[in-house]
Length: 323
Image (tube, rainbow, N blue to C red; front, top):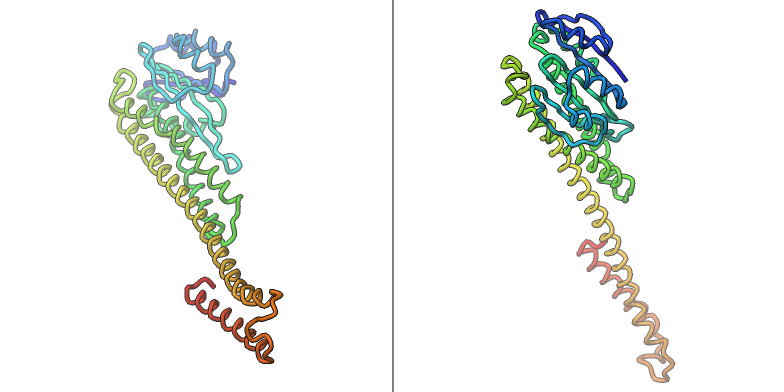
């Protein structure tokens, strides 16, 4: 459950080393130090231990114990509690998770729930720029948020590539229920992704403009860069959703058009069959006196008339592009 617990030196931003949870309070007694803790689905006792070490608020700990929280940012004294929705692509579908973040003047705690990638790459990236990490744990917060946002755009890109592959099925002459089902699933996943990504703009906007005791002025440009990335993600999601809606509409329209074409052809054949049926049905009646019934040329004439009527109907429908 404890992925990482690392102490850093604020004077030069270098890593002091891995520490245990019990040693956190001892490390924080030293000046110019801060601690970065990473957890994955911790139990209640572990969170209570962190609450004791960092003096975290009861309500924030209660939220961190349970997933399915809304995306939000809350202030508790001189600390922040942030809930962020995460996402990753699993077998063609988006799996969602949550990350709960505690930020204080001398600590950063990330708590992952559900589908969420490890933040080890974000930690390594921050450690490669110790001059910025020396500013404090807020730079670690930037690294985590940037990592989360950067993992959203490839999901949309993957869906766009899949949509291009589905175009052949979309414009096919035959109806494929699986294609429409896949388009609907993609649209539903992107809707959920939109609900997860959109609130991030408000959170990062707050970090850019507010909380000067935690977000130093030197880092506001970096958070603005994350805001731009979130904006791009939301724009891409909106564009992709419109493309999917158009693809579903086009597919259904083409299916309806093809059905209409089939019905027109069936109606045309029915009209051609109705003409000879009508003519021959007259001579099927058991009356003694029928027109030209006793004439030897009557039968060939009727055949010629039937063929002429059917040919006329066919040419008329052909001209109307029913065939």
